[in-house]
Amino acid sequence: MIRSTCENALQVIRKAEQEFSLDPEHIIEKSYHMTTVLRNLLCTVKKNVLEKGFSDENEEINFFKSIKPQILGKLIFYNKVFRIEASCPVVTGKMHHKYFSNELNLLKQEYKEHFYNTDFYRYYRTGRTEWDHHFFCRGKIDLHEGVNSFVFEIDTQFSTYYDYKVARIIANELLYSYLVSKIEPDTQQATIFSDGNVANRDFFWTDSKNALIELIYALHASGSISHGKAGIRKISMVFQLLFRIQLGDVHHAYHRMKDRTDSKSIFLDQLKLSLKQHMEKEV
Image (cartoon, rainbow, N blue to C red):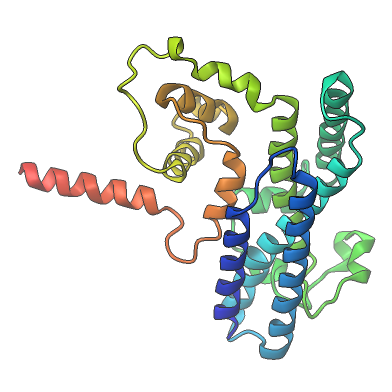
């Protein structure tokens, strides 16, 4: 049983990320620190997996589909942030904007080459589970599927190959949000929150930022806004304007929610309970 090991690993990540900041002045130092923390954490988890193994197939699938990709995906993300920032020629100006725009274009190209229109990407993004035993159990790599040559370098005792693909998806989602924030910095967004933009200053969000982000993602996932055509970024900006609140990196916060060991939708669960109690009270 490695459940306690996984829970401890996710707690370490949550604690480290609470202290992490995208402050430009310290981003290189902070991203390097996160890379080191996650690399050591992955080594520790690997040692425990190899020593203790899994209690059953479901535990193995959960680990390679959810747990390991979260650790590895964030390791890839922070390492990319470190490399990008360490190579940035200037801190402001047109060259700075062009540099991060080029990085964003490279990321989009990577998506088109390695993810777009692939069967596995659609399988993962639509939340399907019927082939989990094939994708997320060790020793089931089928070379007839035309896998990447990277598969010959992995440790087959600690990878199913597809766990790495999920990690790449997670890393790229985080990196996309990060690069967009560099191209459209918070100083531009700050004008949205000026006093003249909202008539009623008494109308504001009083719960946690994570609660609002959870609600935003739920509305996006359900397709309740603009027939599902509105993106997360646009929806979050509308709510930030409406409630006079700055949410920061919503994609990063969302991936931290996915690490929760209990309910992954704490706020939505509480909303449902509150409404039910309110209805019963009125009867």
